[in-house]
Amino acid sequence: MPRATTSPQERDLLHLLGIQARDTNALLALYDTHAALLYSVCATILPNAVDAEQTFRDGWRRIWAYAGTYNPLEGSVELWLVHVMRGRAFDRLRTIEIPLESERLFKGERGSRPATAVPTNPSREAAASAVESLPPLERQALQLAFFRAMDPDQIAAKLEAPVPSVRTWLRQALDRLTFDTAVAEKVV
Image (cartoon, rainbow, N blue to C red; front, side, top):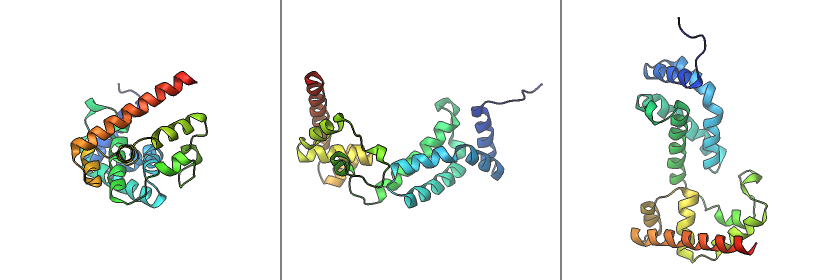
C-alpha cells in the first residue's frame, strides 16, 4: 500500500521527473513551492529588481531545459534549484557594469540594498578601517572577489594583471585582514 504523504524532497523529485517529461503542471507545482526562495536569491545578488526578475525568469527556463542534470547524490532538489538560480544571478552580475558597493557599504552609505546590508555595530568601523588600510591593488582584488564573485583569472583580466600577482594580492589582503582582526580582538 503506498504512503499517503511524501516528504518535500520526494515531492520535488516527482515534479522534477515530470519536468523532464515536459509536464508543465509539474513545473508550475515546483514554481509554487520554490519561487519565493529562488527570487530572493536573485534579489540578494543583483543590484536592482529588473535584473533580478529577468534572471529569475531565465533561471526557470534553465531549470526546464536542464532538469535531467539533477543528481540526487549531490543534494536535494531545492539545493539544486538554488544552485542553478545562484549561477544565473552571478552570470548576470558579471555582464552588467555597476560600481563596487564596498566603498558605500564601508562608509555606511545606503544604496539600493535593504538597510540590514549596512552593519551598525563597532565591528563595521574596524572592518572599514582594515579594508581601507590595504594597498590599493590588494583592496581592489579583494573587493572584486567578494562583491562580484570573481575568481583570480577573472580579476586578472579585469585589472589587466598577471594571475600570479592577483593570487598574491588576495593572499596578502586576507593575511593582513586576519592579522588586523586578531590584533583588534586582543585590544578589545
